[in-house]
Length: 98
Image 1 (tube, rainbow, N blue to C red):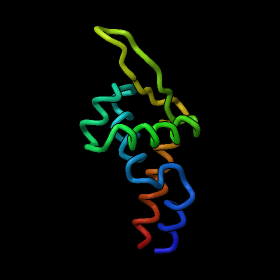
Image 2: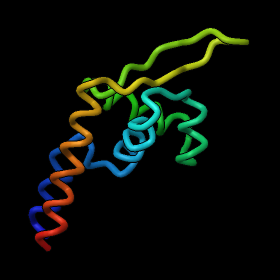
Image 3: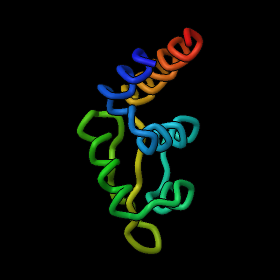
Image 4: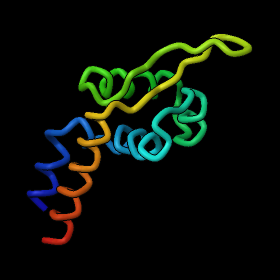
C-alpha cells in the first residue's frame, strides 16, 4: 500500500473531493458552482476551499458569469486536464501492481 499512499499524499488530486471535481469537469470542460455542489453533496464552503486549492495549482479557473443573476463558474484548464489524466494513469499503475 505504500506506493498508493505516497501517490495520494503528495498530490493535489490526492483528495477524493478534488479528484471528483476534476472528474466531473473533465468531459464537460466547465460547470456552474451550484451544479458541482449538487453532484458532490458537500457544503458550499467545502467546495470553495477545494476549488481554491485546485485554482492555486493551476488546474481550474473560477470566474463569474452573468445570466439572470451572477453565478460562479469553474473551467478546467489544459494543465488540469493533462494532470488529471496523468494522475489517473499513475493511480491505475499503482492499483495494478497491488
